[in-house]
Image (cartoon, rainbow, N blue to C red; front, side, top):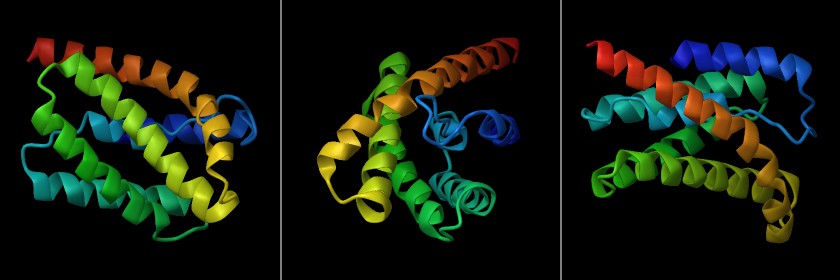
Length: 145
């Protein structure tokens, strides 16, 4: 699923302008579905995905490396305390999108928090569709096991 998220992100980045209303963050969303039973392995995976994301999509080395790790910590916390898996997926999704954009736009684009509020909706539509897509793939995979 991790490789699929990077391939889809690469494919869509060729067709979707960064200023488009549909900007994918698929490798970030996939963090929600990765197994979290071994926290150290999960956090290492978050770091690795962040590093690969930095190399492929941004020239801000180590930024996503650290940011994906921080978001991974939030996801572990949510996974521990939210027992309803549907609610967990939805809340984790919004937390991922909000934290990523909040930190990215305040540090690198514009330090005005109101601009971040206007930016966040353009990440929600396509990434929520991807969340649903991966949810059903994951559900089918788990059902077959």
